[in-house]
Image: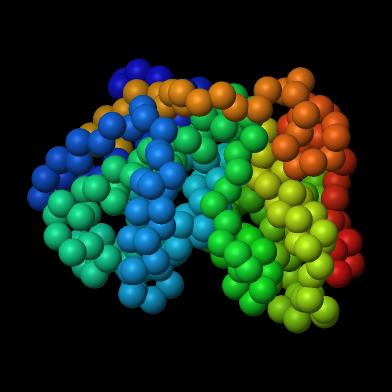
Length: 276
């Protein structure tokens, strides 16, 4: 993607913060994949944020998945306060300017890695902590995702109300928004893995569901003013990813295109009873 605009079919935009927030430029190398050490550094920095309602990296992953799939573009001015638990300039999340710039650079690259996974129809493997909040795997991811849907409520309301779509309902279930008492019994390892697979497939399906909406939004000239610094170059993933004709990494034994990468995955988890 060039620095002049947004792709007509995807939210291929990186997290860019206006200079007035921190008083300096953020010079991020946004075309490089994050190393394991950088991911853990980002996770540690987000976890150390003591602001109420701030997100961990697991929550940020869910938030970004929802925003990238969203029918409209939501820029940093909309989602940075959600990540930090307050306005950036008033946040206690950063020790100093250097810390702020480094953290935001890592977030940019993390966002772009998810964009690449969705755009290229490869498997995005979210950052999930074990055993999970309330011993429910992926609960923080699901809660981050649901917070992301509320930043573009009209489109997401349509998806969640679509009788032909069931996968996103699993995310709301895991977030505790359908039945606060779910699950009635602790999830087995098998049920936990099934839950995660359903949620991640739901996010990928939502990305495809809103493809026409994103194209229409981009063609209408919609944008977020907080991208005033311009757009970084498209993220290029150097390592090999799962192709559509390769075995799905979820372990089903099917090809990726016939499993988690399918554009016609049947509606799963239409009710809380599917996973109990």
